[in-house]
Length: 269
Image 1 (spheres, rainbow, N blue to C red):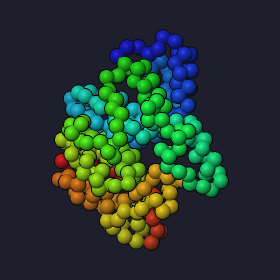
Image 2: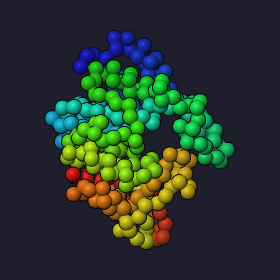
Image 3: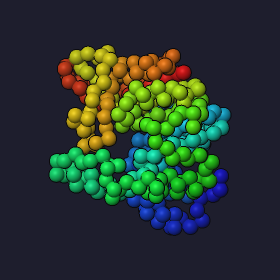
Image 4: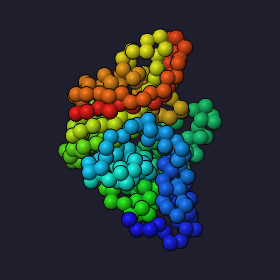
């Protein structure tokens, strides 16, 4: 890979012009993008995900955003990496964040981002600026694909040894359909990480909560939260033959209550 920018101050300026970063990506030369997810958060997340061996494998990163996990797979020696996104890449994220924060301050839950013409630009892809900057600065060979996971045909992408499906499932209105598509894209293992719930009185309950009734975290794109058993169950219903649960924090909810947290599973085709 080529060295980082020869003009660090110019690179810092361009990093700042992106406006909003979700991932903290080390661009070299002491410059790390100011992600909402800090480097320490990423380190803990990587540990919780317990990713399989990536060297020599083909990898699809669904909902890549700024590309942290796509670039991680590339550094880990993956033979080919595809970064798929559409929704976030189509958003003017700084402007949407300002509108969102104002709505929350008023106690409102606003419209779906794609219903706001002032922030939705699927042609200009303002939300892809961070990925593009990091991709260029790292000299990356990751292949960006602009596509809506909810509507794309799996055969347009093919199959991958490893599919990363991180922080995506609970944003999709049709979770079973999404998981069937995931199965069709996967030739080996899918690593699935999602918002989840724990039901204190029934820790093994196979349930899904419809978050659309409460708009979790004031985010109108949050739809579903499964229990751990519910997540494993939908993987089997989608056709995966073997499910390995990842480490899940124990929120110790009071009996009869639900507590949101994250769940991880490795689903093998």
